[in-house]
Image 1 (cartoon, rainbow, N blue to C red):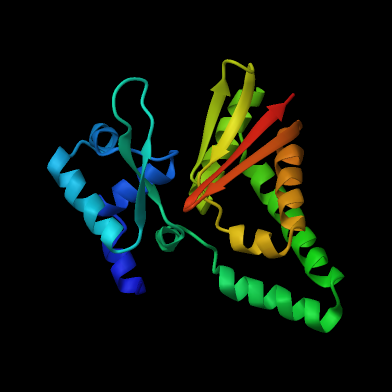
Image 2: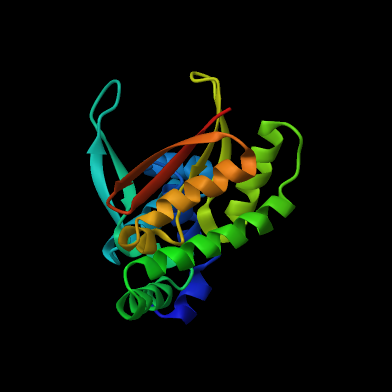
Length: 213
């Protein structure tokens, strides 16, 4: 999709629908109505249009009682609407470094990038308790495009950070060390061990960091 159209849609009702679905495991029209305060028919029309354009697909998910309900989820094409940190260009640079200087070169560059980034974020994180610092960190990550949220899991009695987008996902797929570097970044900034769980289905991305203080 052209950048001009992306900018036009960025704050539209269609984008709100895409953003809400991205922060979920999939939503029905009724659930979307509750979240974005639009009429049922309005949401339905937008979803049908987005599905036709290839940004949504549907499946029937079981309910406790009655017939399965129709729910919408993102397709991989919908990633166009969310931050990606100039992924293709960055990946080309790292690939070129690998070709010229050998397989260790991209890892060394990424390591240094994350070392510098850790220092910068560390200076911005505020709070004295783990919860305060985790909330602050999640807020910074959200500004960076990770759609990050702080959550306290009452079942585990653990603090968690949940992210629904990764601007560097395509790079991490090619250079696996990046996942380790992200874990280390969180551990160094918050001073705790991190347990990472990632889920990817169709256009769904969810990464959950459980903080093991």
